[in-house]
Every structure is written in structure tokens, then in C-alpha cells.
Length: 557
Image (cartoon, rainbow, N blue to C red; front, side):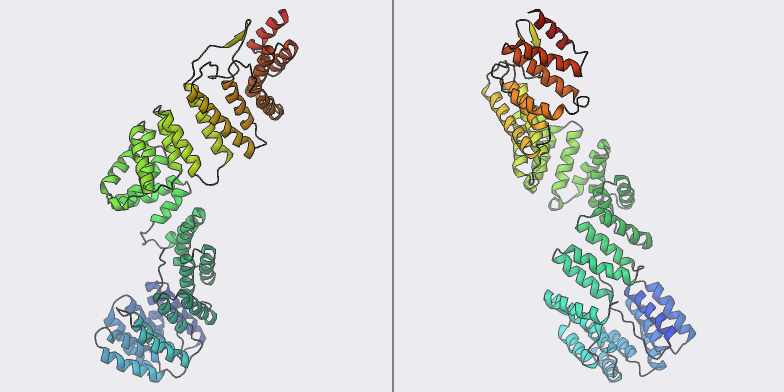
């Protein structure tokens, strides 16, 4: 982020009383904040009160100079010279105007300013800044006058600051930073030095330090609105969107003519304040309906707010307007999600692939590809993308392993040969839905084994959760569909230890576990243990007809 810097204005006080001195300081502070009308009001009031106030006349000259009205600037500088021929700054002002068209005349004015600069180095710094502001910049001339300024006043903060700017432009960042710190040491209220230091910190990705510098500006002057926008931009880059919004809101409430609200709108979007973001961006779209930057955000918001039909229309228009080299990864992925949401998963997959081609590190796109492939019943593709998602994503959680495990389990189930129930000697149970199969499909078995390994990871990373062991039980029940090996038993029993603590909340899971164990013991011809399990099932689900009928059948035998 490139920070906007304020103009180089000086608060110079000479030959006026203390009350006026503070007012003049306020006037130069207004110039420094680019509050030109506020500065003009202060300086014109002072000149009206005392037409011979050379400092106020210099301030009026600076106002006109920075607003590009050079004739009026010259008139005020000349009036300042007439009012006080010993005040050097007005000579410097006349010189920097002449420098635009008559270097020889400028040199004459600058020489007059030097003669008047006995103990005050301000005029010398103004001259140095005039050369620094030339196109191209004249570093050597600027340095020459800055050397003179520091010989006259070794504690002149503005001289150190301008020296810092020169080193910054030469990419001598360390030297520039040291000079800015020296400037701050001699003038704790020098806003520009704090801003430059903040910019250096941003370049070093040291956002906390950058924020600290700008906060110092706000502490000095809470009404220095540019500082709030700068904070908003830093927090935006730092992805602290709530803080960005707070500072942007202060700035735009007080600076209504600034139309650069894109990052403010994006901050609201990333903070999930979609309606507020839409309110901001809608105004910009009405002013410029073909600006693709605005349409992009409007399309994103439409997806997040489920305004899919309108959103697709916006994104369709967006892709016709944006230059190909300006397309971002999120443009493709958001459009893909929008297409998937309206049922066009085949086209969605194409856009997801375009997104990955642009940035293969965007691991979350593999998850979207897996979801769309599942909807299209392209199960092998779905599992491939799901596995890539797990492989690419950093800092995996147990939920990631669980979700992919569920996918392997569910897709394996689609390959099963379904049966109504398992039974033996008239005892019917169906403890696990979609897993009662005798299919010996190698693919199905490999999917179940993969699911089992993934649920084992859930057990490992979330040992206090029942999900890992419970779903391992389901997988192994599907593998051992006739319950002859009892593969699911240890996992169901482990889950039971966790679930039994809250039988009301986990009634469904406990019913499944006791049904499995009841059938397991029946297969093992341990009738008492089987009956005991079915009775425990009835304790949590007294109306369970399967349990009632099974107990009756077992007791008869």
C-alpha cells in the first residue's frame, strides 16, 4: 500500500504575540492536512486583523501556492516582504514561484532569503524543498540548502525530514528511517515523519509498528482525518477488517468528497457486513456501471446473500468488461460457486479449474471441485479432489479428516448391493443404514479402508469426541456386513463410553450401538448378552419395535 503523504508546510512564528502564534500554527497545521479552506480562513482573518502580519501573509501565499493560484501567491509573498523585510520565508516563497519560469530570478530571491536567515533555518528548508519538488528532483541542490539549514539550526526537524525524503527516494531506507526518527525527536508533532515511518514499516510488513506511528498522529490531533483513512488502509492490509471499518467510518464521515471507498466496502464485505458493503458499492455502480472493480464486489456480495440470479448476471457482465490480465483467482472461484448454486456444476468445474490454473495454492477450490463432482455423481473425481484438498491444506483439523472420511464412506455405499436387513433364524436387525451388503467389490473395500484410516485420524486429533470411533464402527460394520468377525465391536464400545453420559442427547447413536451389539452377541450365540443389549436399547427408546420383537423372539428360543 502506498500511503498518501501530506504537503510540506511549516509552522513559522516570528514577531507576533503568543495568542496569534497559536493561531498561525493552526493555520499551517491546516495546510499540512490539506484543509486549504480552513487554512485560508485562519490566515485571512489574521491579515484582516493586521495587514502587516508577515507570517500570516506568508501563510496566505502558501495557501494560494498549494492550490495552484500562483499570481495570488506572489501578491501575498510580496506583501509579506513589504510588511517585514527581515522575514526570510516570503523571499523563499517568491523564489520557488520564480523557479518555475525564471531560475535566475529565483536564485536572486533565494540569496535574499539566505541573508535574512540568521538564526532561523525555515527559509533554507523551503528553498531545499523547492528543488526537491522539481521534475526531475534536484537532490544535490536540495542537499546543499539542507546542509546550510542544519548549520544555522542543528535541531531543525523539517531539515532532517526532507533529508529523509531524499534518502527514501534513493532507496536508502535505513538512512531515511534514522533521519525521520531524528526529525520526530526535534518535533514530536511532525505528522509527515510519522507517516513516512509508517510507510517504511508497512514495506517491512511490520503492521503493529506502522499502526503505532499513525496512532501517535491521532493522539497529537484527533481531527487529523487522513490519519484515520491511513489506519483503515493498514488494518485492511493486515486483514483486521473490523478495525479497518471503524477507522474508515470516521474518515468518510468527515471527508465527504473522497470517493475512494473501495477498501472500505471490501472491509465490510470481508467482515460479513454484506448489506452495508452493498449500500456503499451500489452508489459507485450507479455512477459508473461499467467499472469492473465495483461489479466484482457486487457479484461477490450477491453470492454471499444468495441473490444468485442477479449475481450471475452481474458476474456475466463483469467478465465481459475486465481485461484478462486483471482477472483474479477469486473471480473464477466465486463464479464457479455461483454456477454450482444454480445447478450448473459442469460449468462450475471449468471455472474452478481456471482458478487453480491461476493460483494452484488455493486449496479450498479442491473442496469445491469435490462437492460439484459429487453432485454430478462423478464419485472418483470427487474423492480425488477431496484428497488433494487434504494434501494441500495447511493446519489440518479433525473436521477435515472427518469430512473426507464421510465422503469415502458414502461413495463406497453407492457401490453396495442393498439388502432389506440382516437376519439369522428369524432375528432381524438393520443397525447401519446403507452398509448391509455382500458385495466383494475391490473398489468399495478400498474406499471403506480409506474411510477407516481417516476416521482414525479423527480419533487421534479429537480423543474426547465420539465421532472418530463411532464412524470407524460404521465403516467396519459395512466391511464385516454379516457381523461374523465383529470388526465394529471395539469401536462401538469405545463410542459407547463417551455417549452414555448423555443418553437423551445421543439417543439415536446409542440405539445404533445397542442394536449392533445385540446382533453381534446373537451371532456369537450368547443369548443372555444379546437380550441384555436389546433391553438397554429399550431403556433409552421404550417404543422401539425392533427391540421389542427381537427380545420376544430370543426369549421364546
